[in-house]
Length: 419
Image (cartoon, rainbow, N blue to C red; front, side, top):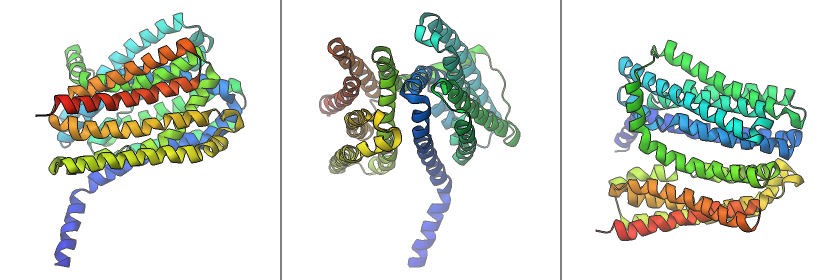
């Protein structure tokens, strides 16, 4: 009996090795990215200073909006097509060509919009070299099709490439950065390593995997955009909310406060990443064995996890700020405590969406939820900025918008999904 069970477990493991490997490398990649920036942060903040580093973070927030536009929600449906046709190189080449061509068109549009913004924004013109170099990171979204490696279940390739180039970039970061005026050099090192990693990934796809990339007719571009619109709308609202707060801080409070917020955000991103796949792991079992009792237990469990995360950040966040940023950045501590509330709201809202709304089939409520979260963030921020200028206020706006997500999801579940 034991031998039979052992054999069965071995078969299950062998059949799912690729899935486990892909999931593991995706998680490792997220953790490594966070650890990399936490590792170099103390050096950056002390060499560049809060004002100069804050300007880089502000530029990155602007460019992140363009990166999201160029990405346009293609990644998930494209990865699905690749996974379904993993043995058909002709289909995979066509999918790769369609996504690449469409992203090039969107990159051109982004460049035109960026140039227009550049002409009207004094902040961008005064830091022209920095903004132009950071904007070049949008190219990575075209030349580094991470979604392809996800589709063929070879995320280890992405991890190896990114780790290799990040380690190499460390040498140049510690070598060339000496003063606050060097923020453009840091941006150049990050951009070059990012784009170079993408070029290596593209060469692997073309020469090792034997796929061909070519331009496709504009009608294919329009079809790709049409198919990706729902994914784009879900992604862009969240990105606008997160990056919009940074832009408001930079516009109304200054670059020192951007640096303060950025450090606080780096601290709370650690537990968010650790728990980011929690609902994904629970989802298959919940769909196979739906149970109201189990749903409630998961909600209670995630509330507890969220509250414990808040308590840990409240207890240890002060020392984390001192280690990473020093006494000059101590204002990041209360901001991190306020932002830690978003861990709780993010977990609970995610559970309500994954285990109540998605199974109902009424997934359009997810887009409405994201839209409400974005609008309430800016509404709270706008009202608050009318009375006072404080980075704490912007953090509170994000926390309150998370609570509004929970309220919206609860109303939908109670009044719209009940039979």
